[in-house]
Image (cartoon, rainbow over all chains, first blue to last red; front, side):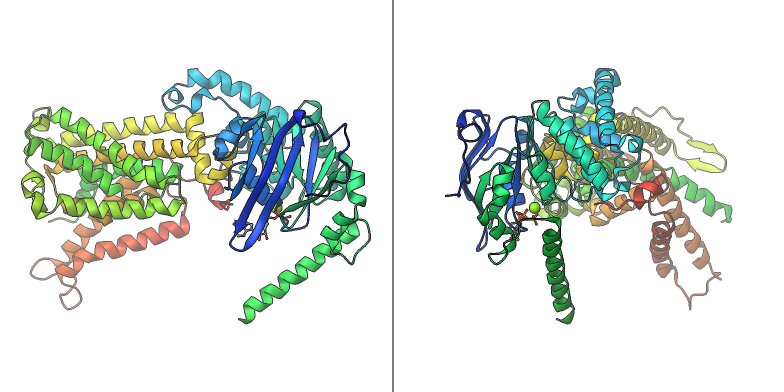
Length: 298
Length: 332
Ligand SMILES: Nc1ncnc2c1ncn2[C@@H]1O[C@H](COP(=O)(O)OP(=O)(O)OP(=O)(O)O)[C@@H](O)[C@H]1O
Ligand SMILES: [Mg+2]
């Protein structure tokens, strides 16, 4: 069982308003159990953060929930409908849209075309109607207006006519988030949306994510930036080695010993700060270098 | 033989029936590879089923021209479904393997001695173009202008073929400026991103495979009509690779890429052929036999073609119509 820090009655204990519920979801890669989640819920209209050390299984869990990967066992429902075996494009059409940790922009399409692709129910996407511009141009115009509004929100409007492949890493993250919003999702799942985004813009993005909640959307995001997690999330779920080890409101969770242990190993006892994060990063880099060297030597 | 005959010969070939056939095949392949990113290495198979349906239905079973033509196009739809259903859900390389294998298998079956009565073995089918000839409105003396000479039926085929090619270019233009075309191009860039936005990628890939295949069949049909013959040797693997060459010379994912590519490809390949033929022929050839015999000369065109292709790839990797800015972007 996940050690619930505080299943307070006003937020998480009522299952009636869960937009997504997952039970017994497991995924093994050979001998490695990447995901082994006994129970997971997302409250409608809330911002939920999914955190955990590298390799905890967060991205794999995202892939399972959205149909990009198949679990070895488990059931999960979105708005009460089972999503087991539902292909990714149908998951998206039901209103559950995800972004990718390794951004997937369409490089040789313009930024605005990336955005337009996200719009749903396009008449011009059917083979025969596509030949007659009159049948879809009005809808295309509406979609373009909406796309430009979103791009402006993400400070990308000046880039609308550039190829998406010419964007910087951070801009690609922003484009991907904006494009996902073109689908008008009920639940948006962001895999490390802030990775590589500069601090000033990060601040305004936090505002945008909060405004998504105010618009009535539900947000689930994976993030390593603890300030962001603390700042905007209503609920935090912690994963380590495939399992959910704790969940609760941000302040409680981050003070939780199990969480600190999961992140830093049992011998650390400091709270998570930027410095400790950097330490972890440095350690990871050293490890990578060692690996690279080992490879070179072999 | 005058030197100018080398030039006029090259031009005649450059705009002649062979160029049309490869242009049409490349328009189909452009939809597969250029726009959707599908690795179809069996465009020759689509051409073959089209051409053979026409030839055998008319010669073996006595059908009239137009119904045979329609069946030829339908056969391409069937082939696309057979190839696409099992592979388009899988990684891109599965389609590549399946198309290469299918193309050779179909060629072996249609050329086999066991089916000699139906498909004529290695000779294939021939003499089935009476229906087409009866539509010919070009004077029987042929057409002569600017030092170029075309036989009447060849010129008729050229008019029909280039008209068809231009109509198809218009069709591709309309499709690719639309949201439908945008989905195809997006699939080429990253199909998981397209899935995550709620598009049925499998269905679009299938539509692209069928459409490009049908246009490939049209190329095979034109090949049969132009030469009055379909034979297994017309649809070997090199046919597919020449089609790729045509497409890359003109520029992939460009509406007029296949047209430009076909004109240039056939101009050079026949120009080089005629040039080396002239240099090595006669009693006292310009290039002495100790250096090169006329048998070897016929291989020179392939060597030079390879060289030209390399130069294009180095100095104009995006093809004639391509956009260099686009190419500078790494795919991921
Ligand atoms: N396709 C795969 N094949 C084999 N192992 C995999 C595969 N995908 C993920 N894994 C393994 O599963 C574990 C979980 O990976 P996952 O990408 O889900 O981690 P994560 O929590 O998203 O980490 P990060 O914070 O670094 O993004 C890792 O140990 C990883 O090596
Ligand atoms: Mg991850």
